[in-house]
Structure formats: C-alpha cells, structure tokens
Length: 155
Image 1 (cartoon, rainbow, N blue to C red):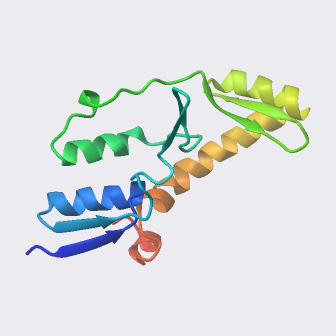
Image 2 (image 1 turned 60 degrees about the vertical axis):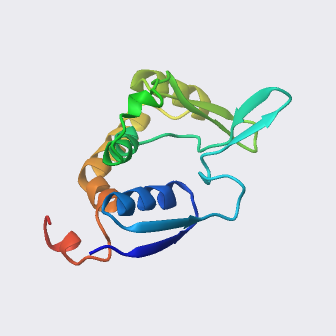
Image 3 (image 1 turned 90 degrees about the horizontal axis):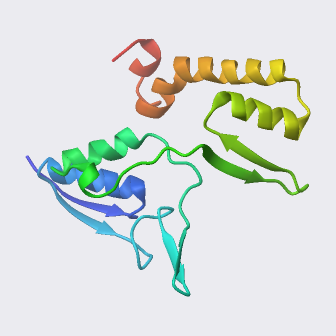
C-alpha cells in the first residue's frame, strides 16, 4: 500500500524523510519556503567566493551514506569525507577562542591552555561524556522517546 505524502520543509530531516518514504513506493511532495533546499545545509556565494553556511559539526556521516544507498546511489559518486585535525572552533563573548581538535591529547592541551582547568579534570569529563554516550546515545539518537519499549528493554 502506498500513500500520497506532503512534507513541509526541505531541511535534512525533510529530505531524509522524503527519501525514506519515496523508496518505499510513496508519492512524496516536498514543500520549502526558501528558494533552496537543505535548511542549515546551505551556502552563500558572493564575489566569486563560496561560504559554507552549514552546521559547524558534521556527525554521523554513515547516516548520510545510508540515505544515498537507500536511493540506489553510491555516496562516493557524489562527494567524499575528509576528517580534519580541527573539528571546529568556538568563539566566546569574552574573547576566548577555543579549537576543538579531533585528537584527544591535542584537545586536552587546548582546554588546559584556554580554561586553566587541570588536565585530570578535563580527562575525567571527557571520559564521563564517553560513558554517557555509550550508555544513552542509542536511546536518544536512534530510538523514539515516545515508545515505552525504549525504556523497558531493547526493541
């Protein structure tokens, strides 16, 4: 059984939903108020330059790959990923600038230098974050918080 579906908003969630519904045989109409699709995944072109206006972090590239494969496409035919040494940079109102490095040791050094926090405290906080992610990440990012089975056991 197929449905006629209308999706309002062609940000990444709208696009992902449209792809998933279309590959299941549904007729999908995608509506967008902007002149371009992609929501936060956008660019600004000015004076021969291109500026990426998208999110500062790109997480879960495997989910993007999954969408391409669902649509019968190979992701590498369209783009490639390049892991950067610097994940992103943060700029604070007080003038503090912090670089988030992909390398854990570099990140710890940066945080020690910019926050005057003890290395052991930073390492403990990073370890705690990793534990929380390992324990809760699946539930909060890949399962519905509206489904009672999320809290009662693995579904």
